[in-house]
Amino acid sequence: MIIVTGATGKLGRRTVERLLERVPAERVGVSVRDPRKARDLADRGVRVRQGSFDDPASLVHAFEGAERLLLVSLDRTGEECVTGHRHAIDAAVKAGASRVLYTSQMGAAHDSRFQACRDHARTEDLLRASGLPWTALRNGFYAASALHFLEPARSTGDIALPADGPVAWTGHDDLAEATAALLTGDALFDGPTPPLTGTAALDFDAVATIASRATGRPFTRTVLPDDTFREQALAHGTPAPVADLLLSIFAAARNGEFNTVDPTLGELIGREPAGFEALLERAWAA
Image (cartoon, rainbow, N blue to C red; front, side, top):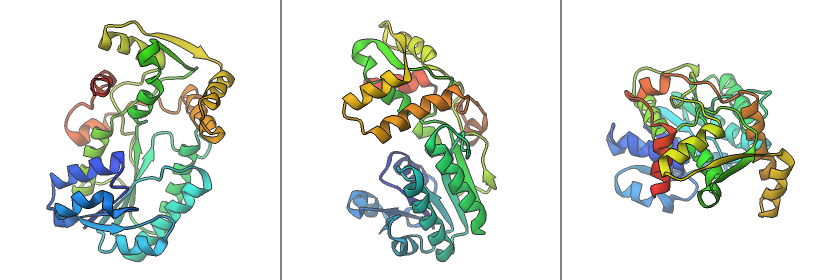
């Protein structure tokens, strides 16, 4: 059995679809908070079990029979995130999983400016101490985040964001395909993988040029002071902790934490990963 957590989320769902192209459905299981949201997978023969990171016993049941377990990182930060991951890793040990693959992030480090990367580093420590064979998928920064930051500019034509640095924006589809390849293949990385990234690291100046070319409309890049960005986010109803988290992405980018470009992702999927321009065109056409 290959078990996937978070199978109704962006990355988890895409990974399950890629798995079903490679192995019979009866070899795939998912652990989800709400099994009703995975009913279509159950109809296709996937084993669907309820599993909550806040209920360790449910995870042991959901992970039963796992040869390989994909632990998709939680959409939480700080102690709440790491505690949930600890529950999942302990459950994987109790369930007898042969290997855990964890969706970490490029830049995972205890001294990162970005809280999520510090959480990833702590989770990798837990995996290292678990006694299980493990792989940390050092995923490139999701291009979906850049598209989220760009959303206001679709109407204004002005990319007004804090000072940044080059980021290797990477598509969910390519990462899901690579993850499925690692879950089903013989070649596995022990410990962290190289960064699994797109083919270019871009700052928002470069993104403005790409957006202009892709749309035929002019886009400008305005650098906002960090305080101004935070005040604007708060004024639009963003909770203060979320505003601070978003701001820390730019601080980490300025620190060069996301600027590495590596060929490993392309090698795993057997082709060049989708470039940012293609991802932008696809998203904005939709």
